[in-house]
Length: 122
Image (tube, rainbow, N blue to C red; front, side, top):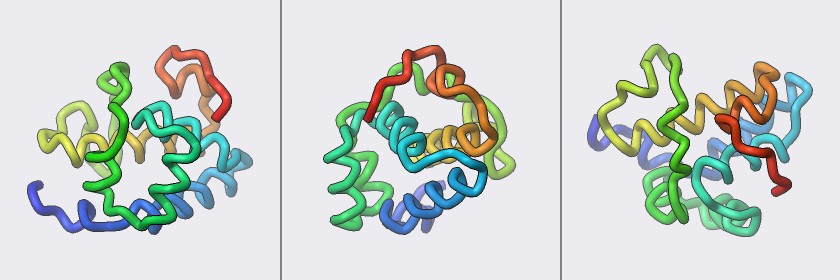
């Protein structure tokens, strides 16, 4: 999947879609922020900066403080692919993020979404 066009999409163009998706299901922007920061290591200010400077998804993950060590516990189907079997590391990170947001929208408990981590305020 090298050079896939999603890599060049801005995080700022995808983030509001995540928020809209979860808000339609009765969840909040804070829930999206919590799962994205859990996955990437960004803090709230870093997340806002990523939206403001329109960095691509490739840049978003390249600048991320660090992928959560429990990210490999994220499994299941997203967009017809098993996230644990995606070979391209960047595509896998993007799909991890998609999967987490889907779980928020489906109403899963935050401790389950964060793979047993204690939910922390963002």
